[in-house]
Amino acid sequence: DFTLNDNNFCQTFNPGSGIGTFVYLVIMGVFLGFLVGYVATISIRNTINDGVSELVTTLIAAYGSFCICEAAHASGVLGVVTTGLYMSSKRTTLSHDIEEFVEEFWEMIGWILNTLIFVISGKIVGYIFGDALNEVTLYDLLLTLYIYVVCHIARGVAILVAQPFINKQCCGGRYAYYDFNWRH
Image 1 (cartoon, rainbow, N blue to C red):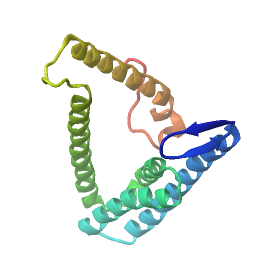
Image 2: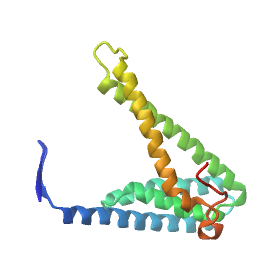
Image 3: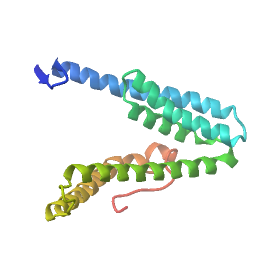
Image 4: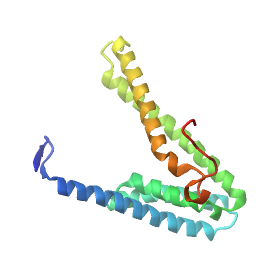
């Protein structure tokens, strides 16, 4: 047991409660994400060739799974990921004519949000690490190089860990459309 003393609160934690909380966050996040994905897939299955309805259902599923998980004090991120994975595995429920439209929409939204994350992060990092004269120093350049290298190492590790699960050989090729090996 240890006491976490911050100016805002003081609470005693122990490893058992931390592990229990972690397990609850993961299991409930995945369960609620699966449930939202299942309901959204059924909703899309009952909609035929209505691009707006099918697209809005995917939007509601993504945002709704996050909100439901957060309201249940579960992991909203795991909920959204699980919803996306489930709906992606059932992508044939989308109308054939609408599937490319939905895919392009989500690709555009992903690009916009990714760009916003980097712009906001850059602004915050610049504000925190910038000096009063707003000059770029050698320390700033070395920090940037360090962050660049660490990001690529983290991405490489993530890809190596996920590699066995995203090949055609996994699950009889039902979920992958290409082969992926260490050279890629």
